[in-house]
Length: 113
Length: 112
Image (cartoon, rainbow over all chains, first blue to last red; front, side, top):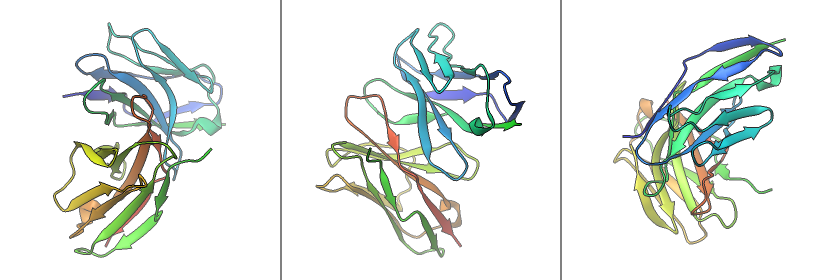
């Protein structure tokens, strides 16, 4: 079945450091890919998405590119802030059929001043 | 902009009791999803509804049932609660044929 694997955390960075959180997926066909962010005590917020190969999703300085050849959707940000501290989930949604989201295990990011 | 509303936000129950969680989707959204997130875990899909009909079913225990009503709100009914049911329960809604699910703030269920 479909699955998402993302790098295990926790990840601790200093403010203004470069961030990469790796995400790879296994799926048949052409899933849509997402990054969700969960701040402490809150629900899931969509951070960015990509619906087809080579699409780049971007939001709030975060980027991720849908790479079909490597089945990857790595999250990057050039300069993190303390306010970016949260748990980040990579997810896929299979095209057609089930519309459910399949999530990775989540990566906890802590950014120190 | 209107968001997904879930109630209650927090719920404490004893073992073997029942619980009902409610979800009010974003206006005009026709699809509702329920997810369960255990402590430190990723969200797991439970069940979804499209136009008041069940559209998909995931790892939902037989003790749980859900439905979507004519006004598109949905309820997740949980019976014979177990300690392991303690989790954050998210509802999400979407407009069919789009790629984006909008999540509510979740209901934190604690079973004692």
